[in-house]
Image (cartoon, rainbow, N blue to C red; front, side):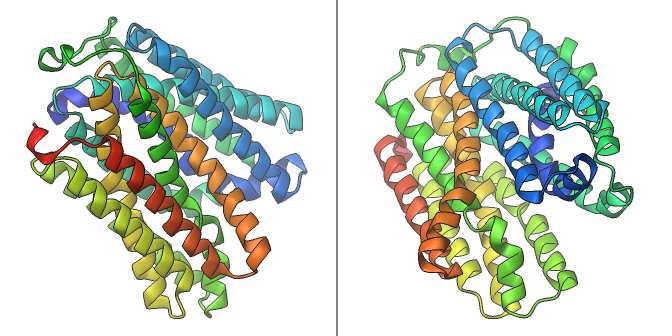
Length: 374
């Protein structure tokens, strides 16, 4: 699928991603606006991630026949309704109900868009292109951060978030009303198997490895003497360099097969997580963040491409997006438990290494041989 033809489904994919990437900006304003603690605000965000995962995984068995156009319209309506409900009044019930509704919409959007991309003739490159768009979107969010946060009123932020999915409305008529599978891949469609479960588990573990230390980066940076301005710059550098991951995946494609790129991605992810948590100097922390960020978005297109190879109808890829969120939600809890037992941030790095190694083991069981690549 050429980039120009990819934009309608890519727009829906971005609708699914925007809420998760905006969560770090919302934590403080939500706590202040709704009169709850930061821990409770974090739990609300976790509920949204959980709703995303439930919707994506629950819908996945029907993605082989579920209309992309109708699914996208339903998803956008739910996301907008959830954001408006969250902004309706400064009450905890409306906040919780709104975030759950928005999370369900995001999960539907992710499943529908991911499945549509998985059905294309070259899903690996198509996924890489949409992840390039995701990184560019997050950079825009970071650039707008000072202006967005000036008001400190979460209700205004939710109103702004409700407007974002509306930008994707022109894409809906361009989506197919029926499931369309690339002809050269239709013959490969068949019943699901244990390989499908292994791919979904690998995606979850890959996400655990990438996210286990992320929530503690501010504390790690402070512990080695970095100021807020310094570690803010470090995080920005990591975000910019993350663009190298999907760009490299798009240029490489599957010329070498999927296994070699996935081996590289798992090794880089493990190294980046280990280095970031063992850093004793700002340079090491920046390198760790950069390597890990690029590895995540280099490997994810191939993992979703592997899911598309296991099931060309897109059911496994759609479910994989839900398992990705499960990994993201489990990562800070798992890292917190490890930190509570050891009292050392370095132990979180080893958690990242173990999760990457487990993902690598599952990939070895499922990935195609280089000679089988397109």
